[in-house]
Length: 179
Image (cartoon, rainbow, N blue to C red; front, side, top):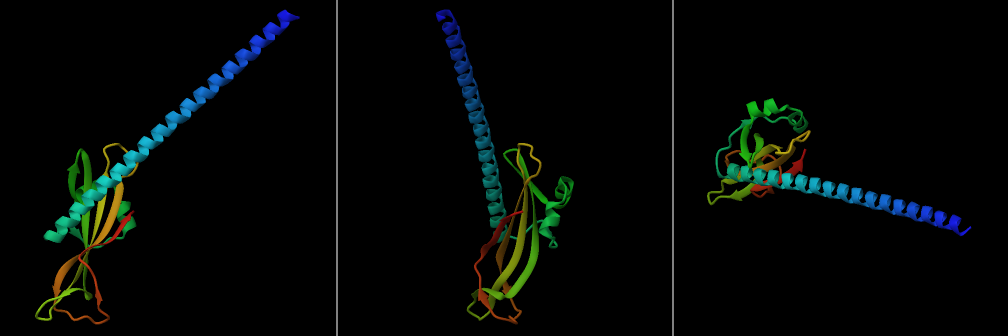
């Protein structure tokens, strides 16, 4: 009878040892998966931060000078559906640390009722609106790039009177979104 119990205890111990081994293996796989997800999340966030930095630089350049790559306004979803070849042919491009980016500037026109300032001779400085669309292609191959878009106001001395209600606007970014 004692011989029988020793064999049974050995089987129970082996069963629990195997059960704990499987639980440990499952925990390690779960931790490994969580680390991979965290790394992907950090990479994606860093890509968005780089893209936002590029967009801010383009906005700054636009505020300082005459814009390049001006096209007629296109619906944002139409821009997003364009293939890489279209962006390479139509848009301005650049590279940041092995990452290619393309951008377009759309002139949305001046608005005589959007007043930035009034000069000493009662001449109005009004808002000239531009929309910038950035297509950023991260180094790590992904299915799609990052599309960012902003609307920017640049000062414009207007001789056209406002036909509606004037409102005060500030120079710079007016809108920001991810497409």
